[in-house]
Image 1 (tube, rainbow, N blue to C red):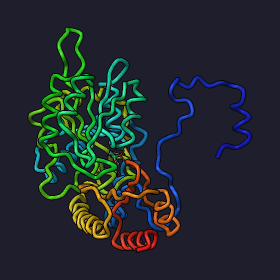
Image 2: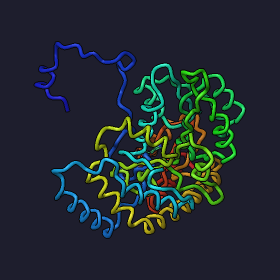
Image 3: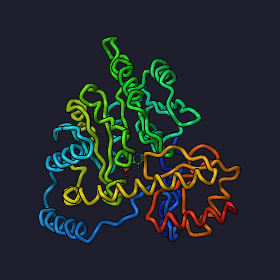
Length: 384
Ligand SMILES: *Cc1c(COP(=O)(O)O)cnc(C)c1O
């Protein structure tokens, strides 16, 4: 990718890379060209022809106005996202309680930009999403990792100890968690939110501030019946933010649209740190068009959830350990040499992800055909 000419041009200058970034690789799963891609938790179904046409029309319309900057506050999109959450979770929110950006990764970076910084700490509990420490690094925020238990649950006493010890300004809780698939009980989130209310940094006046609690529900739509969303807690917790994305259940990873719900005062803080016009007119138009088809897309989620439950059972029937999954992937193991299993699957055209605690592998839920290919490949690899 880098031509000799480009190398010559840049030779001789020592670029002033910030200390701590030396030798680091950009984050990202390997993108290999194999028939069955089960490694990044995408929705396996491309948008239907009707969705494609609607998006194309909306983008064509937006294109006619691209000489102008887009709506900075994307009011219409925020209202539609609020409406989507009302239908999906039964929680009524106003457009002013919604924030959005180019993927929920950017939404969470905004949170760290507003509430992190030198002298401040962000707290999470591992194993969890490997991007979190990068938000902290990029905002010069100290990164603190507590632990999850052997079964990937969160011990509330341990969590409250960590809050008391570090007074973080941001607490990141993925639920359902990646890479484990496990959701946190609402009582756990509530206990943490209660402790966080005055568990944050000490303010200039000597009084404690809150730690902002972020519940990352990137996989929220895949939760099993009876697993409630943390959206139901927003009413009582002004320092809570619930992040969602159109990348996973909604099947729009390529669109780059993530969002969160929180109190308007919190969202006002995020508006300070966002770049002007960060959501392009094309993104806004495409997202609005996709949201008009929410019913069709939500039906697909129902079948992916069934596929997921079937896969968990199938793996357990083969004597494997599988973490309970409220997501569109399963974490399974435990293999003495997981790299060999990963490689064996890859040789058979199935790409899964080698992440999480030693010995475990993560596979996304694909189409029934992809699941069948995964099962066949795994049986061969395990010789059963
Ligand atoms: C996939 C994922 C996201 C969403 O990323 P986008 O930037 O919205 O594509 C957020 N959190 C977790 C834990 C994820 O796995």
